[in-house]
Length: 492
Image (cartoon, rainbow, N blue to C red; front, side, top):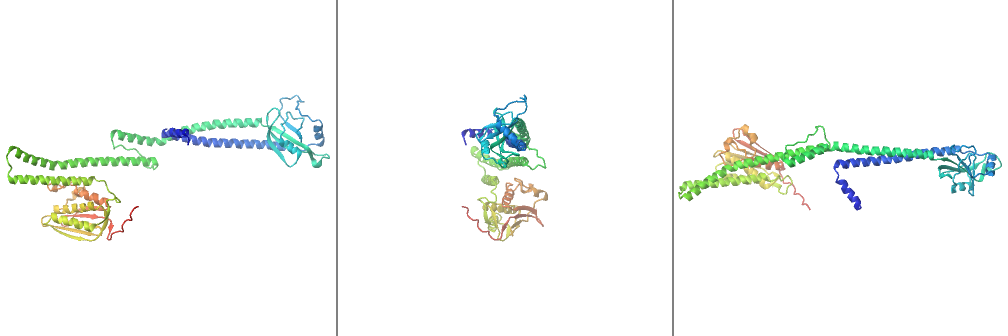
């Protein structure tokens, strides 16, 4: 590709899309119109020439012997106007000898320029053949010329063909060329109008077709300028073209971004609210200890131990809250992340049970665990099971019973605590939501949110419901199998 062509391509690509579409439409129409016009012109030319050729063939006939002898004896090579009609239409007829001499018919007003084909026919005359060509007369006018053998009606000539002579007749092409020139002019004008109309129509179509794109561009610029994610592009309900799909995708994207930002702001607000309480308590306790040191008034040993225990508890609560926030802030790993693998869920449940028994030594925890293998992130899955068991331990009465069962991919944890009121069940998996009756207990309100997120990422379902006879039943369903699947083949 030459440098000039590359510059033209770059210049074309720098144009707006609607201008490029208009130019492409105009170019396509120009090519089509040019092809049709040229084809039409050649077809008309062929038809006109065929008519002239037919007229020439129909005008050829045998000569009488006395007319032929008179023409050859009184051979005239210069056209004359014996009738004084210089303006009469041109007519051409002549005999051509082998050496190229010409004998004009009396009616001929001009001489046809002799060609080698005329001499060849005179040398070897054949009454069944004729040669048609383009030629000129002695004045330079263009002609359509027919050369054929001279056929004699009567007389002693051999086989009725005059040897050493050819008959040449012609018709002028001036009228035909004028018609073709007028046709070419008309075709050029029509083509020009068609190309201009196509360019205008292409520009109009491009503007109409790209109007949704303009709206989309304006919406994107508005979002970039104002960060307003509530803007929507109107889309017809029955429209399913590419522009409609793009608009739907943009609306979905802005909705998702707005929802994500709202959730982020809500998370920050909720985290700030939850952090305020332990931080305030920490600040108060530390100020008391500091003031005691500064004033020299020692705090009683029992009160000092209580303050330090409170500080330690608040620090533990802060660490737990920060860990939960970090867990929730992690991106979704997805089903095929590098962190996910085949996990023996029964081993995870057993490990969580050991931790739960340490946290609730006064409780009775029974377990019926069957093998089940799932694809999940091991640490996240164990934390989810621990959170469920922690809730059961937290709300179980002293000396209470917790029943754990894992069978066919369904884990159920049933406690015998006060249970969750029916009107609070829809909110148990919301971030930072805590039942009014549990706000005095330790916790951040994020445990069940982490459970729901982990189970959803593993392709399962989790639910909480009131148990018959009191208490709560937590149910977790995860897809998997009772036997471990084959190892995934290593990737190269």
